[in-house]
Amino acid sequence: MIFKGVGITTCVSVFDVGAAAGDIDVHKHLRDKPPNPPLDVALRDPTQFESMRVPQARLGAAPWALTSTEVATLNDNIDNAGVPLGDVLLIGKGMETGKNDVFGERTIAEMRAWSVPSHLFFKRATNTDIQRYAIEDRGEYLIYPNRVERFSDLPAGMQAHLSANEVSLKKRAAYQRGNCKWWQYTWPLHAEHYGKRKRILCPYLSKSNRFALDTKDEFIGLTDTTVLFENDQGEDLRYFLGLLNSKLLTFRFRNIGKLKSGGIYEYFWNSISRIPIRRIDFSDSTDVAMHAQMVELVDQMMHTVGTRMSAAGHAQEIATRKCVALDRQIDAIAYDLYGLSEEEVGLVERTV
Image (cartoon, rainbow, N blue to C red; front, side, top):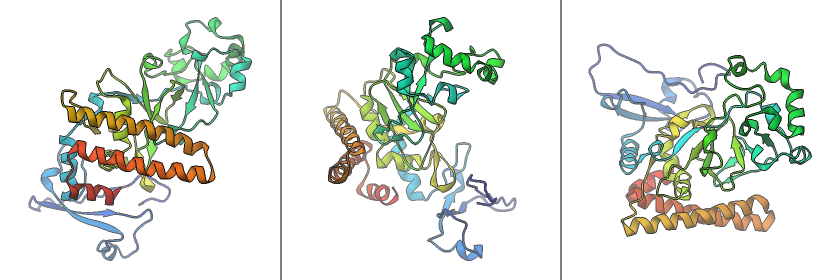
């Protein structure tokens, strides 16, 4: 909040050559607007700043997490109970078309009029469409010509549409470099996994964890989304979905993801890959039971969230209350899986 109109949050580090190594004084700003002057008074106001002492030994080559000792200890405990998610699932960003208004912004009426087969179009999932446990259908479709080798193999209607935009499509930098055909996406990232591996989508920018399962292989996210593909792991994707949407991993991600202005975090693939995920020991009956329970609860949650999105009035209120109850049960399993104490659970509940 130093420069007007610049949204990135700022950390000012003060170095003293003559100082002895020891704890570092950190004052973490808590509001979405600049502190009230004078600053020396504001720094002592707990409603404006959280003050803490951070051991210098914690400030090494890894990304710095400027937190209280209590939070740092809990983060370490969560990390020690899991492995990086990137070691389990295949994670990357959404596809790049280079011309979203040509390949996207299409309607189902156009798909039918052009006789486009189902494997050559998808629904689009944008940053705001992806909610916890569900993807809102915005009614926007993406044509996906990358599944054919020759332009002449496309339906005549799609050919006509692309031909009408040929000039602008050939202006794309990727085409100019020779990296794509003029009528295809500039970078169909992870195309080999679509139709073969189930996937979870999440937005690039969000104030909290929002992950949803594409249950019918019908959505594509572009550059404002991140995608997580199954990777022949033993656990069901719904198990990961419950953990990722839990308060516990929302709490943990706040010291992993890059914070922008307004409390918004970047959910980029390289940050999501670092989320510690608790693996299931399938030779342990307790682990197997918790895995099954998590999958069942997530199934109920996805169904209930879908009901809530299409309901109104009293029916919507009932669905909302059920979602709250299911969230509590999912959170409780997550706490057990990661072995949190009552005090640690309290810290997460107060924070998130």
